[in-house]
Structures are given as C-alpha cells and as structure tokens.
Image (cartoon, rainbow, N blue to C red; front, side, top):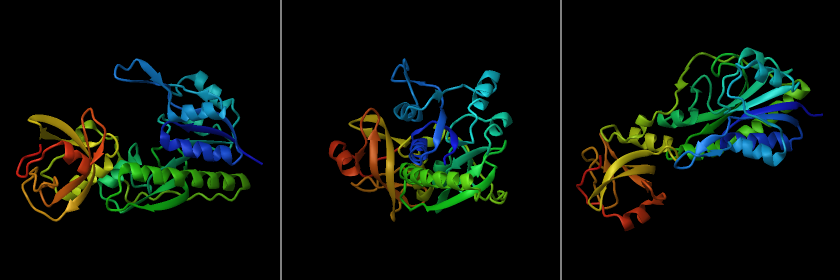
Length: 311
C-alpha cells in the first residue's frame, strides 16, 4: 500500500524529505515549489529551486503557482485527489481550502521545538539565542503560523560551536526519517496528534540584513552566537584594514577566548578580537569577493597588527 502524496517544498533543506518519501514507495502525484528566481550578478538568469531540480530528476509533475488565491490554482491542487500533502519549507501560505483538500490534510516538517521558534528562521534564531537544543517536529497544519497539532518530535542538541549550516544538515536528515515514519503511521491509522502548548511561544522572524553586522560592544557569547547563526549565509561581517584599505570580511566560524580587551581591538597575532565582555577567535573568514578560508590561510595572506581596531 502507498499514499497519494503532494510534496510542497523549495530549498535544499526539503530535498532529502522528498527523496525519502519517493524511496518509501509512496505515489508522489505532484511537487509544488516556488517559481524560478533570478540569479547571477545581473539577475538575468532564471534558476529553478533545489526541489524543482530534484522533481525533474525523479520525473514528478511540477507546479509553481505564485499563490493559492487564484481559483484555478486551487482547483488544480484539489484535482490531484491526494491522500496527504507534505510541506517542508515551501514558502507560501496555504488557505483553508488547500489545507483541507487532501483526505488526511497537510503535514509540515518544522525545524524547532514548537511553540518555540515559529516562523521563517527557526534554525538561525535558536543558535542566535544560545539555545542548547532544538528539534524536528511533524505537525498537522491549521490556518495559524506553525500552530498545528504535533505528531512526532525529535530533539537535537546544539553544541557550543555548531553553525546554522551544520544544524541544518543534521535536521534535514532527521526530517526525512520522521516524515516517512509519520506517513507510515498515518497510513495504518496509528498516528497520534497532540495539541501544542502555548507556553514558551517565540517567533523566528526572517533574518534582516542589518543584523549581520557584528557589534563588538556586545558580550563575546552574543557575538559568537551571531557568527554561528549566520554561517554559512548570509554571514556575520565586520570591516578590517587589510593592505591599507578597508575590507568587508565575514566571520563564518569562531570560538570563545578567555582574554579581555577593548571592543573591536585585535589582542594578538592570532586575530583574537575583544568584545564588550570577553573575546572571540575567528576560525574561518571570507573577504568580500574571495573564497572562505581557515584562519591560518587568512593570516598567511593578510597582516593583522595587534592593537589595531576592527569595525
């Protein structure tokens, strides 16, 4: 037996879930993903989402509506006569008509321990806040923002130096396993749902570009968490004087160091940088227009003078 599934997702995070459902033998009758987006320096090239690319490879019909306000898009979705829709980082709001169209409804894979970090950027916000754990949750969707009843929960520890990229990769693997398990239990009638608690509700707002600039007056722990939360993208950045010119440099990895100094001050030849309280040592950096590199490679090509200031 297998379910008739509509899969709805867009970025790389969603791809392992799509692959796992396909490998489990379910009939994926349609893939919904965001329309192709401009890319390249001039934005003249249209690029398909990662889910779109995988659906082409798997030979699954693809749909890319701009919204579901259009009656044609709604009718098209309903006509698939699906048992269930699986939604993982899709990017469009689903109205009631869509949520209720599949026989069993729509199930979402969300990368947090709900109700903490509802919204667009749960992985980044969990690390930015210094959370010690997060998780992957499978929930039945309702009309609220990540407020549906919970089916399955898998907790994941967040280590002291873990970046958003590393946590992303860990969670997407768990999401694939959990969603296949949820579909199996849904199919045999054993899937149990539990209403969400409202205690500890927190919203994971989309990352604003202005947040990416490092404020060295903040405690080292906050700077370290900012670096981790924005790595690899968009990257926490600062300005350094290199070769007599100011350059924007992203810090993509860091560690806390037990040294004190003025905010933004270079404390030693290993580029330990003072913060409002404590200091950090970058582990991986990327100068604008260049590839990322480890600290040793960065120092081999750039002279950093102890006592100098980083903005």
